[in-house]
Image 1 (tube, rainbow, N blue to C red):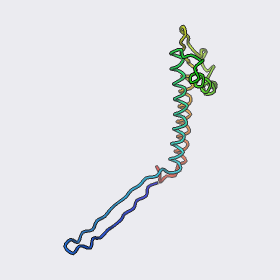
Image 2: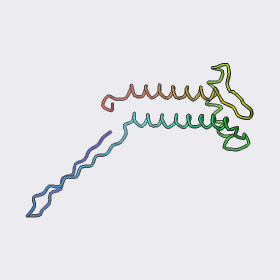
Image 3: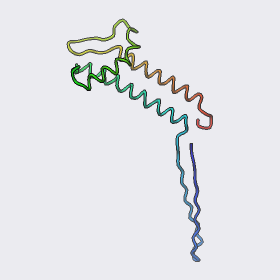
Image 4: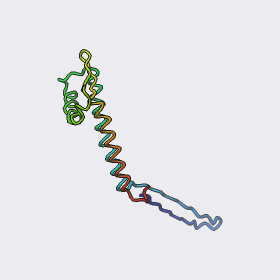
Length: 129
């Protein structure tokens, strides 16, 4: 939503017949714009957590750490729907592991985000396009 205000001020000086105009333009997002921002923010958090999981597993982070434990427990729910898509869910090398299911989940959540954003943009009023 765009609002525009124009203020006109006249000076009373007899020597100069100046007109001073001040223009203020302010922008506010539409309802559809706010929904888009919220969707991007939510999916950004999901993607960030999954990337953090992948990095923590690559560096063999300890499960005993409360932060690592929190990231693993939250992302287990996010990765679970994507487990079993491929024949292998993770590749382990010593203490480190590459979580293939988490990479697939990252791609899957990104595709879902793009589909939802596309739907919101389709049903957005034409004057906001």
